[in-house]
Length: 316
Image (cartoon, rainbow, N blue to C red):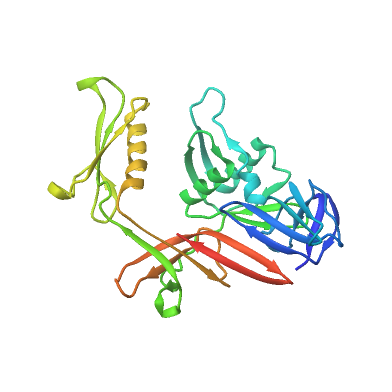
């Protein structure tokens, strides 16, 4: 696969053919690019991409190894660059609140961040949402949360003139792709019971005048204001949030904490050579215990060596 390197997207310099690439899509959001010292030498600050893929980034450092005649370049990939920008509330506002099409909101965020000429956004057909961003989160996390709110995922692709961000629908493969011992797939599946199922949320006010809200986990895992688990099965905790601005703010914080503390099943596995995207859903089942669950693809590790591409998906 030809790797194009450039000083800017307006000035392509050449094509690199002899290289090894280790590309971490969404976890570290970085890359390691290895080449021979006898070949083409790239400068710090150059950018690179492989057409019709997401693989690309900015060279922000290099290591020269004369003994092995090797030079190694490293830096952020495109998601890493998005993760280096912060979404701030407008002056005088506590939060940035948005309404409209996801693609329009994303374009506005890129403009505020000053990178709208570097990234472009593909219009998303009639997908609108209203969203309040948490304070001071990264642009990448904000785009991911915005997309998730609308049932979409963040997808990135290289073009000749810019990096294109799009928001395709999340695809649920859990009914068609299930990993288990039947397919000789190794995975780690954790079934955590004994989590918190009753959260006492303490908001603003003093003593008997303090705002108090009880939240409960239901049998199906949802959260409501009616108790389901009682007696010995009731596992309680407290959220102390005296700076809550309103009852709605207290409830939102309580729901978030309880969602993190309740019972959960998680699994992680690595599989190769599938056409999945970050955010797609697959399933796993342990045949011995009967434990099963579904989870999203959270990262894709790409390795290219001698022209051979291997993709490893991490789920859960």
